[in-house]
View 1 (cartoon, rainbow, N blue to C red):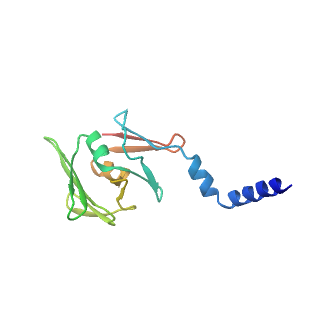
View 2: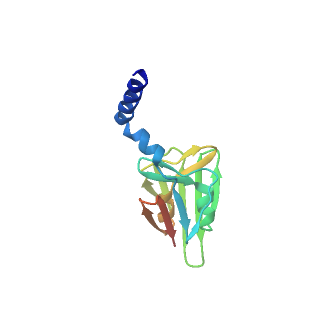
Length: 145
């Protein structure tokens, strides 16, 4: 009888906190750039409905040059071709980024997780001219440019 009471109490507590059970059941996010899966050394994370990914790995998968300014705690992605040039600067923990020297408000700031700078995937890739498609069911992101 005592075991049954404990089980019932545990089920009641679990039902009071559905975000704990749904977070545990959530699939890991997969990111594809031009149809190829990007392998990250730090798992993408969700923050306020946005997917954050390691800056260097996503940018390099798009053949974008990357730099990190330790003093100002900012990452820079720069794309250059014969026809186009784009520069995106994202501060860690900042609310505003710059795209080609124009201020843009961020929904979610970049942050450092596990020694990696995690940036909002949609913001970075769309700022560089890519299209981003999210599949909620499979938890997959397709980036094309």
